[in-house]
Image (cartoon, rainbow, N blue to C red; front, side):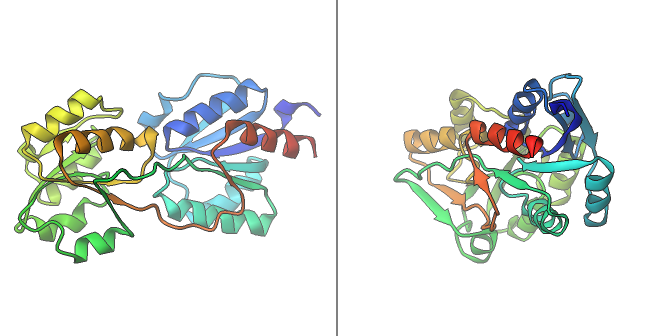
Length: 258
């Protein structure tokens, strides 16, 4: 049996998943990466033993996908806040006895001027946003929940440059002059200029780690003395978890050779 006869499923959606897919494929493992948008395909290298599947997998499809593609192990590199797919895959993997490893980007230690909130509910039901000029860097899917706040605060949002994200933002009450569509990474100079241009008094972000630009936001918040609130990552009981590439490769070797 050669390494290339085995299939590993990489759950994509992050910059780390691109790095992992390339590293795993270059070790001669065959792998399938699942992504939700066609744009994401362009981020992955063109390698003969690396396949990309576009489209969101529903729970009832995952079981068949694992069996049809002869998946022998799963590396979950989805976004830290995309917990629905992680929890579903963990449950199915345990049922089918498929090895599962979560690759979770390292968390940053909050600096002095950072407030960490437990979840979105804490933010939305509290009084943190009232009369503030707020920059939201949370992704577009959560924006509808801020619609009720449009009359109580001046809300701005940074979103990805896609038709879907723009549509959701506009339907959530964000006017075109309060939106910027740009794909990360964002330089520290651009981040700083944007906060100053919009006269921001409060920034809301996720604990997205260095890859998500959290470190730069912390630095800009300190430079401009603007409060930064971080929504903590959801808690998931992962069976195995790492942020070390070598551990991921060892995981692949172990389950390919056994």
